[in-house]
Image 1 (tube, helix red, strand yellow):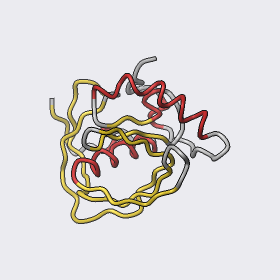
Image 2: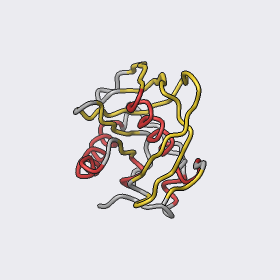
Image 3: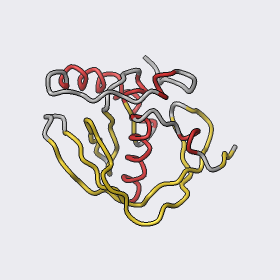
Image 4: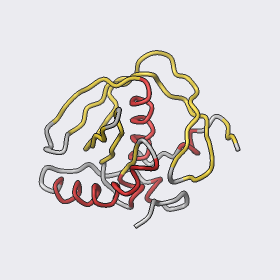
Length: 147
């Protein structure tokens, strides 16, 4: 299994919510497929490993945290332009609008619901990964492309 690249329709199709009945199966498939790619970045979404479910993992400090059915419920402050890369669009940089802080609601790996505020790099990575889960690539949001 490899990272899904731009051009595959799974990347531009919104992911389905995980249910309590099937979260264990979908979570284990996601973790099995995504762990080999964690050394390459700070976040990964399920559709990047060819799974159409709302699951992503984000590196917070030195620890990877998995989010099931994450949704941003509040953005904080002014938006700013952030330069980003994506495993699904190799060797290209894109400038996109991001916010410095976000509140999200999500379920953890035990399917327990949480609400949390994230700032700085973690907030940026979460916005990037949740865009993936919504079927939006940074190339669709770009302000301008850098080579």
